[in-house]
Amino acid sequence: MIKQNLHTHSLYCDGINSLEEMIESAIQKKFTVLGFSSHGYTPSESFGMDENRQNSYCLEVNKLKEKYKDQIDIFLGIEQDELYRINDPSQFDYIIGSKHYVKGEGYEHGIDCSKEVTEQLVSSYFNNDFLSFCQCYFDDLKKMATWDEVDIIGHFDLFMKFNEDESFLSFSNKQYLKMAYETLDCLIQNNKIIEVNTGAIAKGYRTKPYPDFHLLQYINQHNGKILLNSDCHNAKFLDEGYDIAMDLIRRAGFKSMEVLTSKGFETKDIDEFIM
Ligand SMILES: [Zn+2]
Ligand SMILES: [Zn+2]
Image 1 (tube, helix red, strand yellow):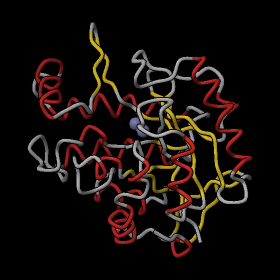
Image 2 (cartoon, protein in one colour):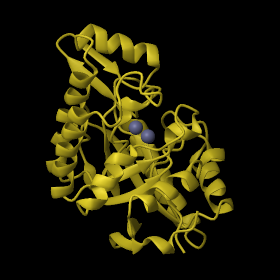
Image 3 (cartoon, protein in one colour):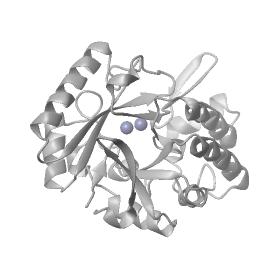
Image 4 (tube, protein in one colour):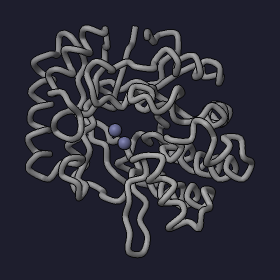
């Protein structure tokens, strides 16, 4: 049976646990596969890693792979931000491509800080039009479709973090779905794996994972590949929301998910996964 998380943060970026504490928690929660994905370089030191820190991170993960090899499969990954592409992807077993910022003339802002910041962003730079904010985000996300180093697309609709009450936009807005579907087409055609991400559930912002259910259904209908990740920043929450997400994944019709092995990604029957 398989239990996997490939989206794990630690003290090397903005997580609160050491790599080893994460591994101990994973073993205790019966994970079979754990991938580390510290944030790659960003200008914020508390968030991303500079080159030195990235080197120490890679060394330590590689050591721990060996130390724990009889108990769990450990992989070395990185969460690369769309604005800050990393220099040497070859040292990583896999790469998550994510978008955390919107950037325009004279500004660059994190998009998932708070509801108030989202409101300000949309009013200051997008003429109070939430749809044009979404379009800007998706246009950038689409760029990663053709980036060879990117295996997984992280939190596809992160800008919906503070929109569970749909106060910014309805999840079934037709114009919105059209742009989301176009973006998904692009990613699926280029064989990118779309992550089902429960990170905002652990943090209490959402009761459902990214991407929204409409989008999960679309991915399934268009033979897109998915995997389940917890975007974990706290060892206690390594499998937080997995039961909720698995229910939605099954209801969206998926029969399989992707697993990382020493030979690369493999597609496995959904019944092989334990939660
Ligand atoms: Zn992220
Ligand atoms: Zn993350």
